[in-house]
Each structure stands twice: as structure tokens, then as C-alpha cells.
Image 1: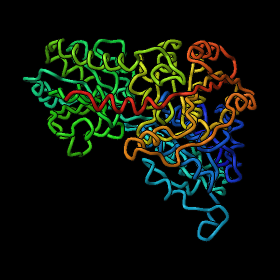
Image 2: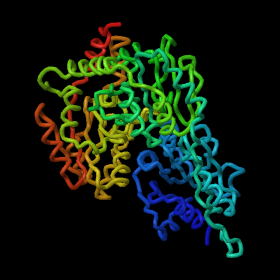
Image 3: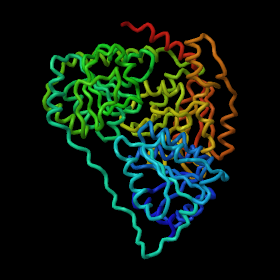
Image 4: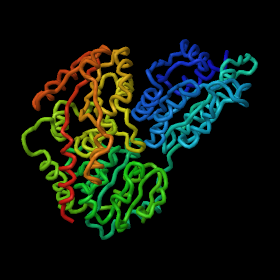
Length: 546
């Protein structure tokens, strides 16, 4: 048995079903070993696409997604998706090839120090110096990647090590898979948390992505409903409480003062559950540093002058909420009703009026939600559309709208949708992206066609970088280098073997979406969007009462 074969056996032992990547000269042995494995290798068109696929696969499965590249440019191309998983807390294991050990001490073709490059953006990484350490390094990479807070890890396999022959006398085997047990919360801290509610009249639950990672959405729902506490979600926690629930306040996440910020300003106690600063910094919702905060999570709170914790309850989030809730009585429902009214009335005012042309973002969202089932899966790219989708798109279930918001890397939606469809082939999947983000990884449309994956890509087209244009207009009153041209997206889709649609008037979108979702092949929808609504939103939010 060769070292590469042992590594593949260790991947199988970890339950890996799919590896995303590109083959290379330094990974020839590994690619050959995968042929005899039950692991499916998904050949992508770019290493960044492979890393994004592993990222999203890890978010949905909560088992580390795996991506593979060769050395040098393959590794550098992989990096953006690896960093996205690192900051978005998605379990991922990246594997890269490397030159043989006898070339590493000198200048050599395509050789760069990949370990040093990956070190700041992974939880742990290492180069495998010899075959005998493979079982330990693979087990450690997966254990660290999947342990809360999850993230990316990296293994480098030099070419000569992958070829190393392992004699039968060495008897190297994969290690037993173990995961650390999340501890129970401290009874003393639970009691302190209960006391922190004394005198509170306007509590708010601030729910972060850690709740979804911890499968604690049912606990949040029970806690909120039992105590009649309204719930604000970060963008990455959408769907924890159904937005149809009278206690849902949708999301908080705009740097501008949105309706959710008006509610937060009135709150006298914030129960932050599974909340991570990379999702939305405390300075945006606690600028006056006057909020009393109860921190409920697996990990201690990060240090921040705007996040001074009164009580921290660490341990299993579900048990923490259950124990805290057992010591409290319901709050006056009028507070939650008033908070909900602030959010809903704001959204209704934005939606008022007949659909215009090009379509306003609010009306695109309304049509999209109308044709989707509660458990359909939306992958949201990064751009102006992300801000609209994150704040207004109603969600009924966790992980039904995936938003990249820690690293916020453009180009994630198309490869992410491919990974989502591979993970849950029975679910309908739609990628929502801007024309900027779409063309960053649109080459993966060929991957979707080759794999026969019926997914939908809804492109919000404004022929420019919408968020930057918006910010430039607000700050300077003019724009700089944000406009570009686009190919004919319908013909572009057809050239890959996909189906293309173009929305040409306001009432077409809904019927096109229905047709697209019933397609047996990938579909690209070119939907012109009126982003002048961005400035109108800015003015509307400026007029909110203090």
C-alpha cells in the first residue's frame, strides 16, 4: 500500500463521501488512489470553486467538506474559499500537493511555502513528512475542523511522500473517530443569568450562526415562545425562528440604522446566543455601550468594548436555554408585538406600489419567496442583493438561506449551489447572485451541467458593482470604476448546455422561476434590477425616529 492509498482510507474512515478539486502532477498518486475508493471526486473548473463547494458542503452537513489542489497556483487559487470557511465557521479540510522533500531546500519549479501561507487562515495546518504520521494528521485535521468553533484546516502531501510504500509489517490503520463532548452549562452561571433578567421589561434574543451549528433552533423557538421574547437573527442565522412567527424580528446586519436597530435601541437586555462578532460587530448595535448582555454559547465571548458581558453561560446551548428558561416567567407580550410591528410596517412601506421596471429588489424577493417551498434552499452570493435578501427574504427553516457574511467572499453562490444539490439532491436549490459575483465563478456552470444537477441561478443584473456604487454615492455623491458590461447571459448559459431566460417586464419573473424550478438541467435567469432603490432606502432609514 502506498501513502496516498492510506490517506484515502483515512478520509473514508472520517465518513468523507465527496472531494472537490482539480487534479495535478503532484497529486497523481492521490488521484489514482481515489479511483479505487468509495469517495466521489468532483472535478471542478477552478480551485476556488472547489473550496467554495467544500465550504458549503461543510455548512450543510456539519462534517468537514474536503477540497484538493496541486501545489503553487493550485494552492493559491484554493485560498479564498479556505478563508471563507475559516471566518464563516464552516468545517473544511484542504489538501494540497507539494514538491518532493529533496527539492524544498532550494529554488524549485512552482514551489512556494504553502504552509506559511495557509497558517493565518486555518485553525491548524501541517505538512506530512512521512507515511507513518498520516493516520494522526488526518484525524487531527478533521477533529479540529469540526470542533466548535469549526473552520478550515490544511494538510500538505509532498509528492515523494505520497509515493512511499508501506510494508505490511508497519500495519498503519486509520484512527478511531472521536469528537469532544460539549459540556453542560454551569448551574451557578445559569442562576446568575436568571438573576440578570430581574427588572427587565424589553429583552431581545440576538441569535447567531452558532445556534444553527449546534442544532439548537428548536431550543430557541421553545425559549422565545415560552417567555414571549422577540428574536433578532444575524444574517447567518436566518430561519432559526420562522419569520412567520409573531416573535421574529427578521435580521439585524446593516451598518446603516435599520428597523431592527430601532428595536435594539429600546432593548434593556440582550441575550446573545451563538453570536459571533464576524457576523455583525457589537459596535453597530451597542454603540452607546449601554446594553446588559447575557452571553450563551459554547465558547467564551471575544473581548470588545461594545460587548461587556454581565453573565456568560458556556456549554451546550440547548441545555443552557432549557435551564435558564425554567427559572423565568413570561414577559409582557406587548413589547414583542410592538417590536414586530416596527419591522413589518417598515417592510410593507418598502413593498408598497406596483412593480416597476427594472424590478425593485423588494419585488424580486417577493416573487422569489412566492414560488419557493419553506425547505427549498437558497445560496446567496455577496453584493447589494445580499443585503436585500438578508434583511427581507423570509425564512421558515434554518439553513434554508445560506449567506456568506464572515469573510463575505464574492463568487460563492454558483459553486455553493452545486455542493448543496450534491448534499441534498431531493431539495430544490437556487443561487441568488449579482452579475459581478456570477461571472467570478460562472465557469462552474459547466460542472453543474456535466453532473446533471437541476439548479437555478438567479442573476440580479445592474451592470456594475452595486454595493460599492451605493457606498460611493452616499459618501461622495458620485461613482468611480464600478460599471462594466456583461455577455448575453441567455446565450452564455446555452453555450454550457444550460437553459437561459431573460426577464423583460415586471410580471414575467414569477412564471419564469416556476419553469426554471421544474427544469431537469441548470437554468440561468437574467433579471435586471433597479438599484436606485438603494439610495431611496438610505434616505428612508435616515428618517427613522430616534
